[in-house]
Image (tube, rainbow, N blue to C red; front, top):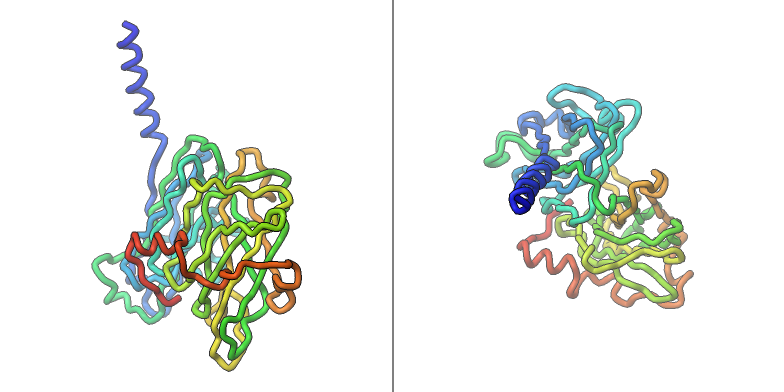
Length: 340
């Protein structure tokens, strides 16, 4: 009798675990991008519970999508099957949007490390996918799929850690006619607790040649990651490395650019602009307040330089080569460089 009870209980537990997970796929027909519309949105509604994203996977023909972004909102801007949304205010309603994930350059998706999840609360159950299609690609010649989109996997069971994000970046510009121009950022970790570092990603536009990120602890530079931003922008899972960010640490990043143009290139998200961003995904407990879940470190590229503030800096900070997380993933997946 005891064995029978265990057997029945085990079956019930497995069944409950299976119903804890579900997927949603957001997609837009490629024919929607007709030359006049090159950025469009679509939306769906999630289950009315607190839940956690565990996986993002692109569903698109290679070479046609500039980038895709996933947001959650209280209400979407529209409930049409799809709508034009070049203006960021046309993604969600007036209450604003919360970003979840951005994909581009034909990168692989992101399966979030076990024990972590990106929280979605019951006030933000509307998911909006924004697709920026390449303007020189005609929808009539896009490949075997007649749509582009993202599949999002969710679960309702509370993970050990909820994913929060910090962003290091720059304002200012990349100087004209300058090779190996470096832009630096560094900020002291502002939170009163130690957090595990789960993942990171590196981002520039077309002028970027290398990006590197570090934790500085008691004068020691601990490398988070280095890479060539010309490859598809991958989220590097490093939960198994056991890296933590602690009170008193300094987070630092450097981007290296080659600008052979005869004008400065300003930092910004618009066409023709540049960016230098390192995204750090760290784990927090479920009771962590909102202001500790989204951190930003931004410094002026013309006014802030590592050499002014630190006695020594890593010699390979502008070198994307070596046995890096990116190099191993590029080799494993057979990835090639893709223009932004």
